[in-house]
Length: 116
Image 1: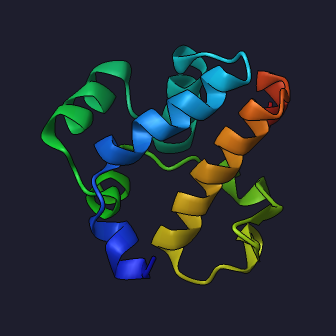
Image 2: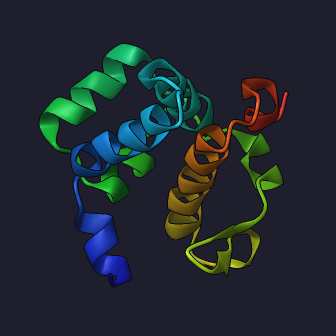
């Protein structure tokens, strides 16, 4: 998938995949929402609004109230690429979210996922 296609993909189309991945491994939708809130600063209500509006991934991240500065401590490989080596800021933030959901699905404790 090209970068442009990922950017224009609605966040609402990807969100259920994040939730399903977490739930398959015994985690919850609430935990996915907590991760999204930690990364972006969105409240539960604001997240629900963006899901209802089918906001694109790019616009969802661009409108985030406060991208967590601790996100730069997220490292590792997603889709065969080291997240810390991604130069495009929007793509890096997308992969940060992917990485956090992967960590959740692997059973990592929330305190470690949220870099507490």
